[in-house]
Length: 57
Image 1 (cartoon, rainbow, N blue to C red):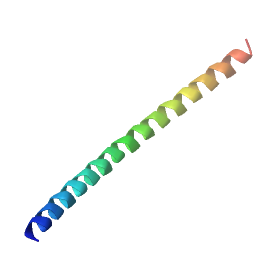
Image 2 (cartoon, helix red, strand yellow):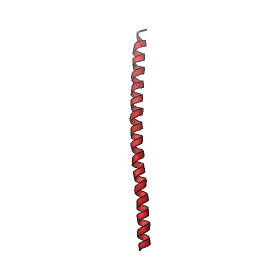
Image 3 (cartoon, rainbow, N blue to C red):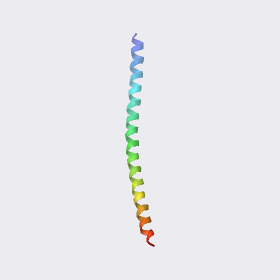
Image 4 (spheres, rainbow, N blue to C red):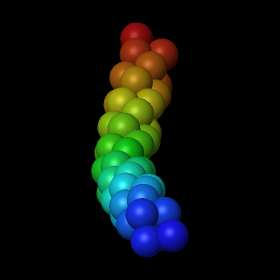
């Protein structure tokens, strides 16, 4: 029984560590997605401005 409890605790520790790692990685991904979104929005505004400026030419 003691061996089972040790194995269970070790497996649970590993699982919780993996979960914590995933949560941290997700936070990084979320931050990168926000950055990409901002870049795409800025690029879109720049292209729109360029098109509008060159329409009248």
